Image (cartoon, rainbow, N blue to C red):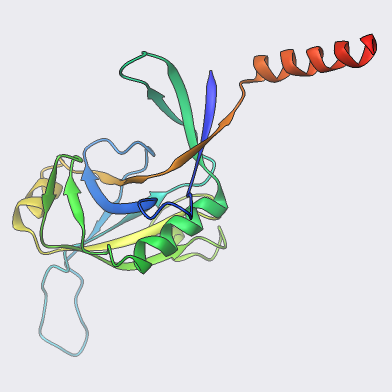
Length: 192
């Protein structure tokens, strides 16, 4: 099976992440957690914060895909460097309030209010909330002011984040293709 590394083409102004989508089945296979009903000390307030926290991108995680036209199966992944670039470009372009649901419709009332890369698997904030993700993972927290989305979260219809954007691809050969290529190169050198 072919493996395709997705990268950001800095020469292409369209490249990068345009929005975060809330979805039932995130491609990165990591759900978020909902942070709610935390009491604020010294005040008589007990209100829902309506904040979702989860992984937006996990470096080097293989994600299965099928080309709809050719039916070719392949896997994609993002390097740790691309995850960092994507996160930085997302904020440079001011996309923190751009959101969709199931990649189908734009929705209002969703804002990325916190963002970080996991740098330490032991002491990272994500560990406090039960995540076990690799170094370089882009974590986000989203404030949900959209009542319908919040109801969907509570009903279990929305379980994670998925990114939307444009990336270039850098094709990596499958192991079989690499082996064949190496053998051909060795034969060529012997025939010289």
